[in-house]
Amino acid sequence: MFELALRLGVGRIVLVDPQAVEEKNLNRIINATYADIGRPKVTVLSAAAQRIGLGTDVVPIAKSIANTSAVHAVATCDVLFGCVDSAEARHLLSRLATFYCLPYIDVGVQIDADGNGGVDQICGAVHYLQPDGSSLLSRRAYSLEDVRAEEARRVDPERYKGLLDDGYIKGVRVEQPAVIHLNTLVASLAINELLARLHPFRLGRNAEFWVTRLSLTGGIISEDQEPEPPPCEVLSQHVGRGDVSPRLAMPEIVEDEVQDAS
Image (tube, rainbow, N blue to C red; front, side, top):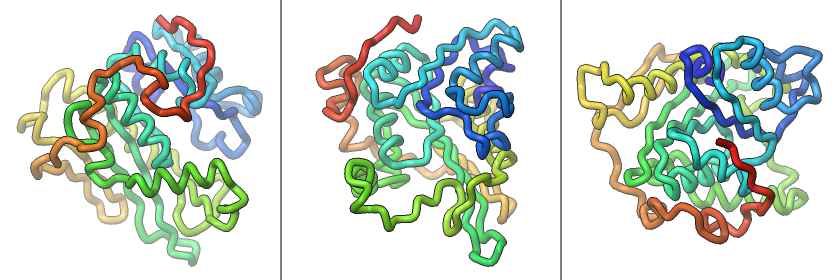
């Protein structure tokens, strides 16, 4: 997604990711090399943007989005892209988009293993969300029970040590999954969703399109034209609240030094 936005001439990109490059990431992080192992992912991508030299201003934040400095930086953006793999992270991003009135494009991929070395399903989805409309929660992309379970596992990992953290591929542990083809495809759909909103090119009204789903196993890419679910009852009360204390009305947000990301 970063590479596509960069090549399309986006003027400013705020990157938030607390993780460093590992060897197992090299087959799915564009521009990462063995020399980058141990460096923050956002630093590697920012350096790549400078080498390419298209003039994009990249703000790398090597922290979790659950920090006030990261929330503050993202709140200054025009649109939010989410590429996370947990309900807890999706819920936090949904709140951030709602509090600061940001359109939010969420990207998700999944591969279901058949247990015999093959796959049952390769799929993905791109959701377009507005702060005063339906949310990933009301669309049932996750539940509050999922969020609570993940939070409990994070706070008390011993209690949940028997749970399998599947990551990309459900039903089997894979340290270095070959998912670059799927990630790139879904990322392209997400960028096209943004472009469709900026430069309407669909035959129908953009309001009719709120989620794009794909199945590589089924050979299907579909844009749901059913009515969008109603506004989210949980998040709608927070639309446009902006800076509050605690940040996003979430005590778990870590207070750290907020720097000017402009």
